[in-house]
Image (cartoon, rainbow, N blue to C red; front, side, top):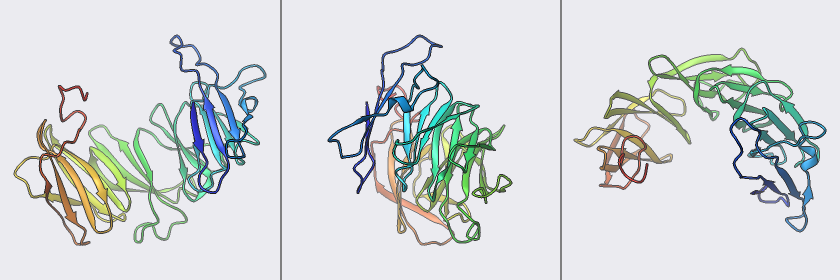
Length: 300
């Protein structure tokens, strides 16, 4: 059972009950049940009837999503049956949405509860601006995606936020920015980084890595959508992987994998100049990097 409280100031609690017993491959999963409390758990209303595929078959809901600000806007996902159920009032009224693709994940647009992205099992990204009534193709061969903040400079005159997408290419991956996607499918596309291996967005910073060899990677950093700058580490070891531990307006903390058993923690003061110099902060930090550290241990 998944239990979710709608958040501060709300008396709504949502419970999604699922049968976790395995089913034969190719068979539909067990139906699920939804119970919602509107009085902070004193009583629960069975809302399962609102989540039917047809007159006799119930949905196999596996996850639900609340908008980060407008909490009453929710999307329930039935991945197996390619179905979404949307509500604008904490499940009091529910609308069924049949999809032509298998929904793997959902990401709301932070400033508009009616707009969200849906990522499917074929690495294709879709967008709806009318809370599921219609969907438009955004990009194919997508690896990662984030909503950017309304940063000054490149996208400050756009109607809404830019969408950052890491797209898989034949040789490596490319990070692109799609601006004006808030209002139109004909968005402006800008390539902001080529040849990326890994990509992440933390606060106002974008981090991208390039893989030069099996054990040697480079880290590049962009602040508020500006130019990507190569990070330099005060170390005699090669850098085999990176993990951003913290990113604030004044300081960056990055863990670096040097060998299969050695990783160190480095710090850089943010000066907003054209360089990021990292100095050693903590030696022999225990940090697990999948596929590069502790390969033969129980951590895998």
